[in-house]
Length: 79
Image (cartoon, rainbow, N blue to C red; front, side):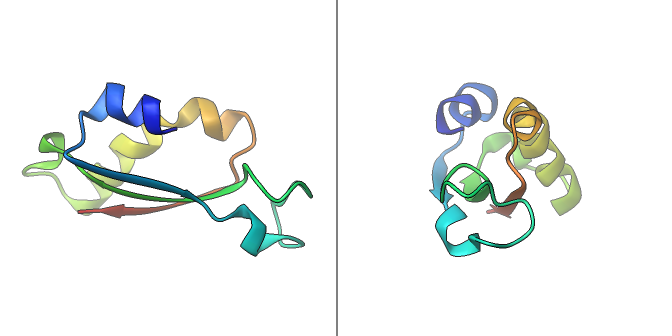
């Protein structure tokens, strides 16, 4: 995820946290404790002048392949 976000959005700040272990037993958890629930803290020059919804859409678009592979939840903090 981090490589994809760096390549796509050229962030000035980026932190990707796998919080899957904290969601064990919840909807979307795969039983392995990783790879399903993430938190992304990101700022990017591409966010300038865009609404929060538009910033989140950029992040989701960049991460679509991960969503297709089973990422269940991505909490986005677009700074």
